[in-house]
Amino acid sequence: MGEADISAEQSQTRQESWVSSPDVDPGGPRHPAVPPAQGSASPVGLIWRIRDRQTFLQLRRDGRRFRRGPITITFVDGAPDGPPRVAFAVGRKAGGAVVRNRLRRRLRAVFADRASSLRPGAYLISAAPAAADMTFGELRNTVSEALGLPEMPR
Image 1 (cartoon, rainbow, N blue to C red):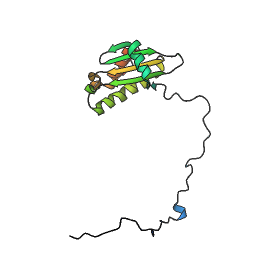
Image 2: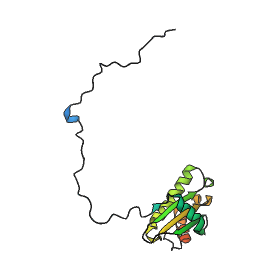
Image 3: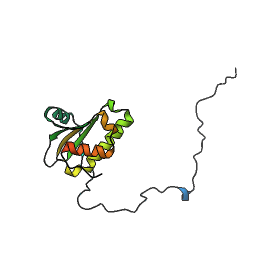
Image 4: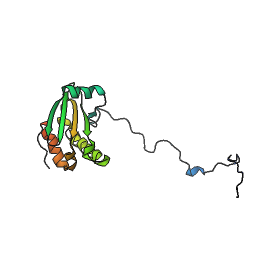
């Protein structure tokens, strides 16, 4: 059979490619320098995520539950000067990963719309499988009812 011994080493005589100087990227900023903004920070990210185990244990132990349809909201008071913190629980019975992630994104959008009317504390939002079949307007109104807030117009 036609086997041959070929070296796996690359030759050292390789020449680097040359690019003319007008075509070389000079680096540095592409936009003119802008001075930093003055004043308070913009109200982006008014809702924080719950990440620590202690808060989840406190939600389980001391949380007050409010249920409307397929949405259950568990709430624990927080520091008066702290932001609302939110976690979402969407079980596998709601559907595949795409369906669960879509539902989670929709719930996150509902809470982002309502950020200014939320009390400081920790919120755990649990969604039953029927929540995946709801329209965004129905989901928004169901969450508002569970929170005790007035319904938003459609």
